[in-house]
Amino acid sequence: MSDQQDCPHCPEFLSCQEVTRCYSHRFLVYCHTLGKTPTECLRYDCALYPGGKMTGFIIWGHQQIAAYLAEHPESFTGDRLLDQTKYDAWLDERYDFHEEVNDEHGPTCC
Image (cartoon, rainbow, N blue to C red; front, side, top):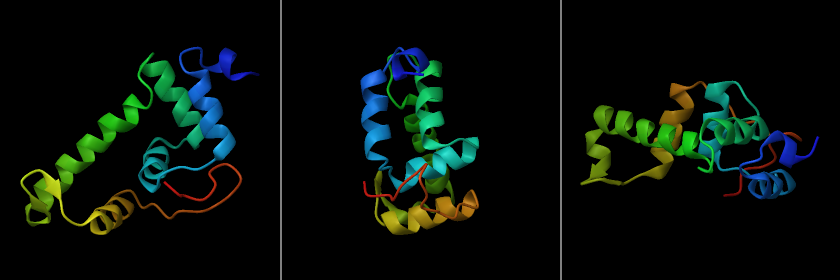
């Protein structure tokens, strides 16, 4: 099945992501929370938010930052997150995420 048939709203974007198989660590955590592969998440977000590439992931990311701020206000200066690594570790622990590299979601590099 072509991307056009699967996701008519953003086939070019999906093609790019599927070819590179390079996803950010946070996107992989998002996929894990939904119980979906990265490709499934991209299609899911396209269907749920037509015309809004990765809108579901962006909304989820803002919700996570807000939750982290509530738990760790010392980790911010104003609205600026001071330690990205600690935040990522918090996400991993919160969602019991243990990154695996395989054919479906290749190495994180973004």
